[in-house]
Length: 407
Image (cartoon, rainbow, N blue to C red):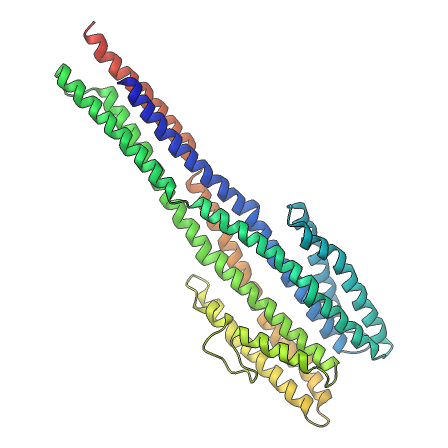
């Protein structure tokens, strides 16, 4: 009998320990590997988009660009370069990283040629800038998208691994079976010896029940915090990042269209398509669907801040519509440029700042909730091991005492 009970307790320990460790490893990956890589890839995409938009806006000023706009471009390129290095060190996919490391210097070199020609007043500078932007939009940013997609796949895998349904089922089955064996053993001993209580076996049963209850509770708390990290951290963070990247693209399209001086119909069409994805028509009117509306509708503590993004974007959209109308008017081009550089840039920066704040808040919530989920399992392996080892020892002692009574 002692061997059967000991085997049951060992099986319960294996189920609880192995399931707990599997979940902990998945959480560790979410916190330090896949999650960190995904955040870096999202920030990389935003930095690259910001660099492209800043380069176009600085070029629009003509001649020597404003120092703050030049600094914004240089800062975005520098940040993007650092993130590429970080992603390479983290073992990201080789192909998109190769594209980024090879093509980003080509992009910056083309931008510098555009700047040089612009300072000399040569119209070829605009052609160089469009070439650079085409390289960014057609080659560099898609490589960043592939990095983010690869990290997102790993995040989804780690989330599934950290919340496997079969883990609590396996532990519950092993625990119930073990408790049933312990109870059956005590009933049989009572019938043979007419002694109601075996303190050692009772204590072993309580310890096994404690180990089972502790494990099931830890799994439930960990899963709740994990789902919160996904619903109130990962999902809104991802959607906000997408909205910011699309907004930067529309802002860059506006600048490039102005630089083209009436030959930017394709850029205007791209800006309209981007606005439609955000949830606005070409006249700046909100649609019933769109990324900003979907982001605002997500539940969670940052809902008010996310809801404020839509009206902030609408303010910029109204400015962009007015800029395009001025370009179409005779003699309105300089007014359009002044509006774009003044109120348009200011309203866009308010949106960009607000979206960055929301992104950072969601990222912080993701990181905190993942840490809390990991804390829920932190003491589980040691506690379960200690409880079940003691239960095995008490089982052997309890049964041996009854054997000794009949020697």
